[in-house]
Length: 144
Ligand SMILES: [Zn+2]
Ligand SMILES: [Zn+2]
Image 1 (cartoon, rainbow, N blue to C red):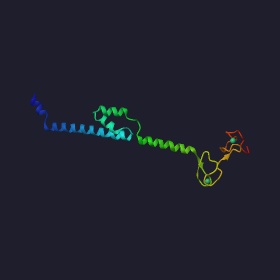
Image 2 (image 1 turned 90 degrees about the vertical axis):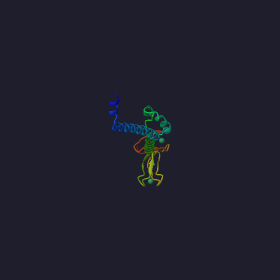
Image 3 (image 1 turned 90 degrees about the horizontal axis):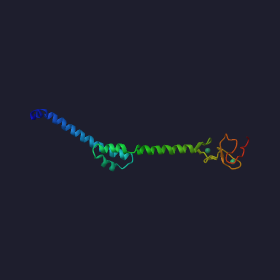
């Protein structure tokens, strides 16, 4: 029996076994590095998760289940997009005379004093060009 085993475990087999063990260890170390890096990118305690990832297999699975779903860079980007959209909503258009951005409650261009909106005669609020009645005070708009 021992002879058979001795024949089976040739230096080649030992070699393959060693390579396999080294491969597993490398994979394990890489998984810890990946967890630290991923936790850092997601903006959540990288070193804490690195310690958790030291527990073989279980630590990695725990991190995969409990990690935040969004990268912090993505989150920042999303906030930027929202801020930009809000600014675009605020912006009504550009001055027909000089091209200065006009916000939705502007009556005249802040740069060249060109009138860009109609104004209610009674309450002096800015009106959309197609409004017939001022929605703030019910005054009829001139000429309609
Ligand atoms: Zn202007
Ligand atoms: Zn009015």
